[in-house]
Image (cartoon, rainbow over all chains, first blue to last red; front, top):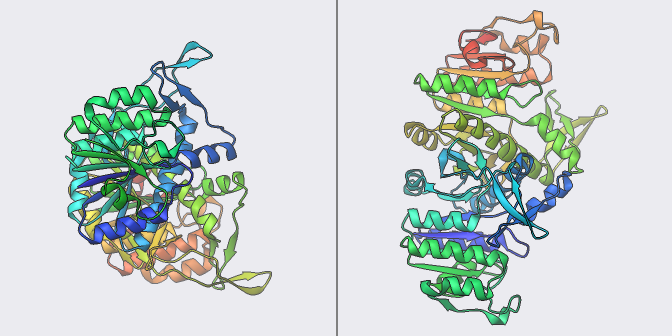
Length: 268
Length: 268
């Protein structure tokens, strides 16, 4: 069983991703796809007159400020346009995909952070109208039922709070939680760079392997914003028993097969 | 087993619909909800600079002109904002809802009408960049698996073509096809009027019962645009073995229980 996370950044070729999935699935690979939609959410938010805002936590992680209206736009893009666009691409290739958000069937459940701290001009601000959280529990039964029946689940944030509200969760960490819960052999986190770069954005500075014990150092020493979250997800997955995490490139042909072959940053 | 269709028109109280579902489901009622999103799709289409266009077929039915961009906006609103908004409302009431479009798992499959005829200023025009169709096959296995596992399916157009493309289908007829395929006892089609009106829009002119053999006459004599499609769906459902169709009102408290009690236009 492999979990494939493909980001929502520019340059990612979803047709190539879906070609690759069709090949792998027809060869018998059990697979779940998790996708993002960040860049398109920014565009749609602008177009609908509710421009995106990002905040930085005291520990240095950047995330989307998710008020109720942002969550609604987020759902439109992630669960509507992106998710159904991918389901359609897969169905056109003969893959019987089912698109679900983390809210459906309480697939990804976690606590909503009702107040979060953000650093703004050097000062700490507390934000309350915020719908974000983390995935603490994965509905493995639902995923296994669908996989056993021959479907390919295509999963997307938001997740769901204990109270039943939609919450924006990080897609990389949600896929790590999914891989951990299902005891996947591999978690592939693909985006629009070749992997962890020791000298970002110089693509020739790809770090080929990182050991679990070195993740914190790598994160501190050379990972930029988004990559730090991917490394956090990788660490969580490996610690929970996933054999291998590959942070790879979703640009170009066969991005999943290439990551499975070890192209990118391999963490184990 | 009952199938409840709730339209996407103004004035519909989705909180009341979800309150009612929570009560019915906790009392053991097996239920599938199908929803619309037409009015919100119009708003979002305007806001995104791709205003909605409607066409009238030679036989007098009005429908949304669905080019590729319209389908994308349609998916954003129906599968994203509306579907997840309803799933959230149900989850907050303790109902384990799962939102699916007709594309997911090929839930609603049918032929895409690649060329459709429209009447414009008295002349017939052929439109080709169009993604619409009808539901010819329902994936009962998927729905039964979810129902047996205790989930409440929340279904929305689009459906999927034989080739795997998203196609806009009429929600009333899709719920009729679902009710027929699952041999539901009741199909409740709820919108923002009390039922079939013999003198539209005079709400005191409610027609309390229609027999199957009188549907065509009713449709011709006093049903306005949207109601003609509901009557067509009702006819298709009854002919396929559904015991009773109620066309009722989704405004106000307990709209489903009221329809089950026979409030609205009862067709059998």
